Image (cartoon, rainbow, N blue to C red):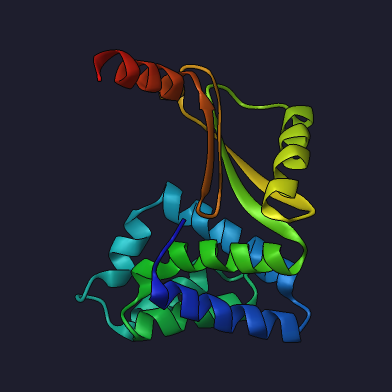
Length: 178
């Protein structure tokens, strides 16, 4: 999970504003879309940090790309551009997601597996691990990682529950080799 203090401060401010204006779900969804855009087109962040473009031009680009996004998200992006912190946008979205989940009794979790898990499997994991971290439910993102060979690794905040074949083999190797 993100450890950026800058992203955390911006996320907290945006979270408070979204909560006051009853726009938590909308802002959260827009931030998820923002992360998808950043991941699918890393050139966007490169463009927004490029000193050759003026701040006004960068704001125009954001306004065009995110024309249907909540104004709070667009204004936050504009602020990040002004403060030359736009590279923190993905971290801000991650921090916001954690704050929103906690406010709704959820925890954000990443589940690493060798294949895409079914909804039933994800619900089962959510039920089992939510209690361990004192939450009602988990908001799970399933990530495919063939290197784990089998099993699952669940990451909830700073907690990691690793029940993968790769980690068991690593433990066996340490035991045998010393």
